[in-house]
Length: 610
Image (cartoon, rainbow, N blue to C red):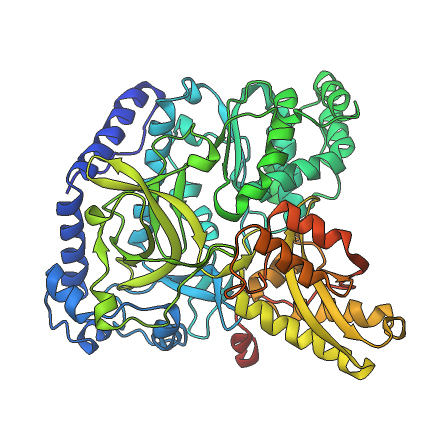
């Protein structure tokens, strides 16, 4: 298998290491099928004695043909009993021959709780490999990146322990807390304005404030800015908009605001922060002139691009990013999830709508399930709960996908997932040698998303049903509804449009509708509730009551756009601007959730057991 590039040791070998990284990409994409066959064989050979492979009758075989014939294609719910055994302390080789080191909590949910993805220690090295490829690719398009710093807003999130004692936390929290990140070698490409202590601070206010302060103090050295998601970067700019006066005071005096109480953060920031009245005046002038258009290039004048995810639901933040940055290039560098890190963008300066990712064949064994659209109006994807033998035969290998076809990604990983349906829908956009490149189309079944939350149609339906039951005592019922992710302000929030059947709407007190908002939020998954309670990345849910006949008008509009009256179904989420305008023109009253829903780290059953 091609050798992974070594980490940089000093700035003098940047070019040499860049060339090694690019050669690695070239080698694995030229030999994509051989690499994939080898990866699968190694995974199956190493885990031959695991309970899961023996239970499914693989009997020590490591060839691709037997694997495809014998092994089922599965979802999280299929694996949940085994995962719960591991979480509860069973250390026998159930899914993987290597010990499970921790669980990575997915933004996807099952039964309202985050999915738990098993991982092993060596996966950190695999993730580090993918990170090491990003800047060599980027440097082909933007020179001089090794001469400055990156201002990246990176954060850790809360973690929990399973009953068996394993840590459960998001994949990025796991990475930032690992030695691969904290003790990374001297590398001009991982030279950030934020000290590790500010990133690892759990208090979101202190972390954001201190990272912004350090970024402003080093503003002339910044050549690239970013966050993981576009929504997170927008939150940072909005935070600056709210707190620039305090930040300027700190820069002017060289002292740290008293609200920053974490000793390690104060110590790390004090090494960077020195009295600088000239810089304070400059920041104050730029932030107080009445317009925040282009604030990024004004405060950080050497910035060449913004590194954030703007594909999928994050595309809704592109107008705001363009406004704040004077339309700097928006760069999506990599494609990853809690299950596995997948691939990288080899054309990083492309337009956001054209982003495609090349899957790196060494990361996992990849298969692809062809998908078809059920409904072009809603963009929904057919989703059989399990595959029969004929459908299993439809899965194709990495090198056999067809240009323009859409597929659901299926992975077999080194950490114990076998033919696992990730739930991402990808479209083949081209090829790098023999390795395909994919556009990210959507997350299967997701109808609403503001940040890392993903709310599907079934979950939304159940939440709305729970809330609407509060109207019965007023002889009112819900006729129809739809939803919308409103990101016109920060933080964004969910909006539900409700059409009611009621004798006298004036008899229903506003507090009833406010309680309906709260009940919906209480009924949504833990990722949503964490965004409301802990991360403050999602605002209070809103219900907008619309006039009677509104959803008939919505159907009429859809029919004028070519929908079939025989196949029309009310979309449970709307994004098309004319439809949103129609709905908003019919609103008679609106209500917001009066308080945050309940949330605590870990799964509900763990809290009960503890």
